[in-house]
Amino acid sequence: MPAITGKEYVSRINQQKANIWCNGSKITGNISEHPAFKGIIQSQSNLYDMQNDNDLKDLMTFPSPTTGNSVGTSYLQPKTKEDLAKRRNMIQQWARTSAGLLGRSPDYLNTILMAFGSSAKLLEGKENCFPEHMRAFYEKAREEDLSFTHTFINPQVNRSELYLELSDEPIAAKIVDENEEGIVVKGARLLATQGGITDEVLVFSPGGILDKANAFAFSIPSNAKGLKFICRESFVHGESHFNYPLSSRFEEMDTVVVFDNVTVPWERVFFYKNLEVANSFKATSAFLPFTLHQVVCRQTVKAEFMLGVAQSIIDTINISEFQNVQENGAEIITTLETMKALLTKAEVDATTDEFGLMHPDPKPLQTAICVFPQVYPRLAEIIQLLGSSGMITIPTETDFYSEIRSDLDQYLQSASGNAVDRVKLFRLAWDLTMSPFGTRQTQYERFFFGNPIRLSSQLYFDYEKDSYVDWVHDFIKKPEE
Image 1 (tube, rainbow, N blue to C red):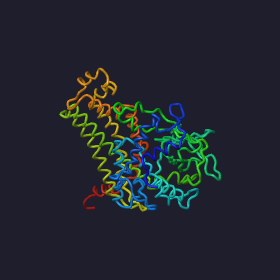
Image 2 (tube, helix red, strand yellow):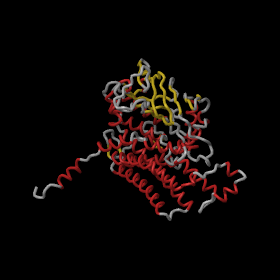
Image 3 (cartoon, rainbow, N blue to C red):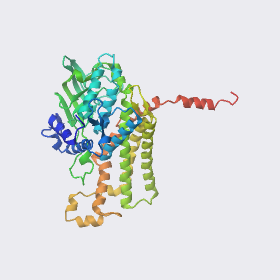
Image 4 (cartoon, helix red, strand yellow):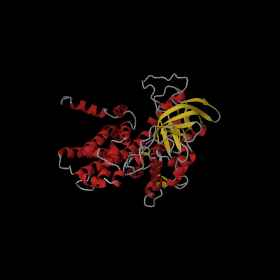
C-alpha cells in the first residue's frame, strides 16, 4: 500500500485499542479523543497528510523498490548524496510543522528501521540471530507505513556499573521462556515516548548487557496481549491554542512499557540471547550516523524556532538597542550556525559504507549531539531573560472575552502591536520554556541521545587524534633532526 494519510493513521490507532493507563485509569474509547492524546494524534495526522500533498509528494515519498508505490522518504536507503539531501529536506519539512518539538515524529523510528534493515548482514551466521526477519520487517514497515515507538532503557533501579538484578520477579524486561510460538518476555522498559499511539513498539537491548535473558531485539504491535503502557502526568492543561499554543498540539506522552508474559512471535524476533550481538549491533550497524542525522536535522529547525521567538520578543517590546540583548541574540545565532555547519559538513563528507548506503560523516554529528544538550537550556534561559516579567503577565483567552478587555488592551499593548498579539507571543514563549511542557523539552534535549558525559567520552575515544599528535611531535623536533 502507498504512504498512508492522516485519516488512515488515526483510524489504525483507534482500532488497535492498546492497553494504556493514564492518571490511574485505563483508557477506553477512541484514543484520538482523549484529552492527553488528542493534540499529538492530530499533529501526527497532519504529518501523514503531507505525504499525499501534491505539492510535497515528490519530497515526502519515493517509489518503493519492490512495489513501485509511493512510500515515505524516511524509509529511503540513501545511495547518493542527493538521496541524503532529500532525507534531510523531508525531515526538516516535517520538523517545521512542530518547530522541532516532536522528538518522536514518525521519521525518527522509520530512520532506525531503515538503518537496522540495511545492516542485517551483521547478523548472518550468528547464533540466535535472524537477519531475514530484520530485512523482512523493514520492508513490511516501509510498505505499510507503520508508525513506531521504541524502548531501549531499563528501569532506574540501581545505576551502578556492576549492578545485577537479583529479584525473583523481573524488573528489567527479560526472556522468561521460549516455545514454538516465540520468546516470552516479562518485566518493564523505559521510556516509550508516544507509547500506545503507534502501530508498533521496537524493543532493543540498551547495551552493556551481562545476562543473556536481557539480550534481544524485536518489534510487536502496540496492542499485543500482555503489553501495557503506563503514562506520566499529562502536560496538556487545555485545548486552547491561545493559552497553550504548543502543549495543546505537540505534547508527546512518555510511558513505562510493561511486558506481562508477552509472547513475541519468532518472525518478529531479530536476535535473542546473544550477548555479543546485543552489545555491539547498534555501534557496528548504520544506526549511529543515520539516527544522528535525523536528530540534528530536527534540532537545527528547533534552534531556528528559538531564534524566531527571541527576535519576536525583542521586536515586540523594542529592546534591540541594548548590548546585552544583542549579545543574547548573537548567542542563539551562534548555536544555529554551528548546528547548520556541522550538518552540512556531515553531508559533504558522506561516504558509501559497507552496507552500500551513503552515510553522513558521524563525527560532525557526534559533535552536534554533544553541543546541543549543553546549549539548549541556555537558549531557553535567554528567552526567559528577554521576556522578563512579560513571561508572567500572561492572562488567558477567557480574560480577553470578559469585561476587563479594555484594561488588557490598554495596559498590555506593545511597542509594535496590540495586547492580544503580545500576550499570544508571550504565552508561546512561556509554553516553550517555562510550562511543564517547556521544562520537559529542556530535560528531553539534555538526555535525548543518552547521558551527555557518555556521549562526550564516546566522541573523544572515537575521534582520530594521532595525526595531530604526530604533527606536534614533528613540529618540536630540532631543525637539524
